[in-house]
Length: 114
Picture 1 (tube, helix red, strand yellow):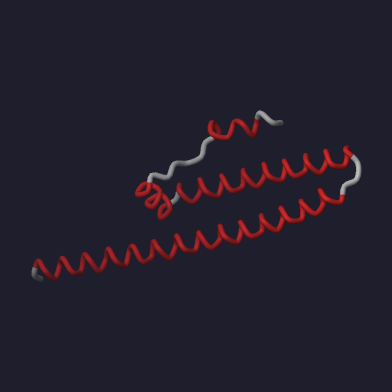
Picture 2 (cartoon, one colour):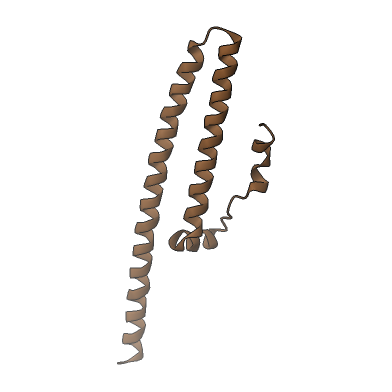
């Protein structure tokens, strides 16, 4: 085999690798978009519930519920993000673009609200 043939085989292998990588990242991105759409639907429901309250106590309860829901959504999104950039294809993209995992230290302001 000539050196040129080996080079072209190597280029084809690298292209195949990045095609597979792109497919996996695209799949993960579509899953995140679906989760975002579900989150937007939940936010609309919470807004409707907040508008239906009559007393300050009910408004306070609705606000606390919305805050708790937002905390849970943030935790789920942070966990999903960290999982994606912690595994093979996502980790490669994260290294290339400088993405860092979100740590508890960056989200302490949420814990201080409890």
